[in-house]
Length: 201
Ligand code: ATP
Image (cartoon, rainbow, N blue to C red):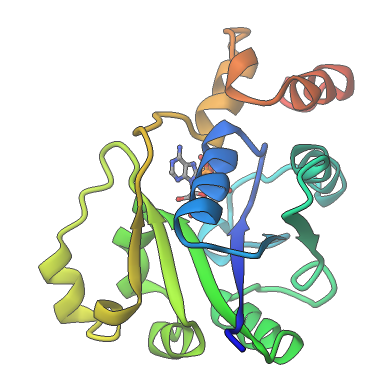
């Protein structure tokens, strides 16, 4: 019997926005994923020193973002362990939890660009069955350079076709602080949550 295919979508999700949802939904369709777990990272090593919204608010927002889509669920794998949360450790734990699944890690093109610098990236790649990447404006990907740095990528890399979306969580936080509109960059229920909880003032 063919293995079930599990998408793993890690992020800070501060806040989750339509770019995240489109990536996850297109990856599900194009990479034939049976389900995708959203892995909220409380303490991302590459964002150390930057201000990150409380885990409670980010949890609530991811929960709202994925509720109603039965192919998506929220993983506590990083929330339940002390930081720093290196992705290599996250995927190894998930491999133990889902021994009969093929594991496909989802990311944007900016993350793919940075991949050679990820902690223990060779182990990260060998734990996975595939990587699904949605390009991002300005992500500056040089495939041959990446393949030279990470030969394992060749058989694992899949691009997900989608419109380029110039939307980022950072831009949403900035717009909120500047009282500029970001309303349609997020789901209505997330917009309402951000406003009522006054998260990005
Ligand atoms: P920030 O602006 O705070 O750095 P972000 O918008 O990049 O946040 P993250 O939670 O850091 O969001 O991203 C989780 C994953 O989603 C990353 O792999 C990132 O590349 C990807 N991603 C986020 N936004 C987009 C987008 N608009 N298009 C494609 N991929 C995206």
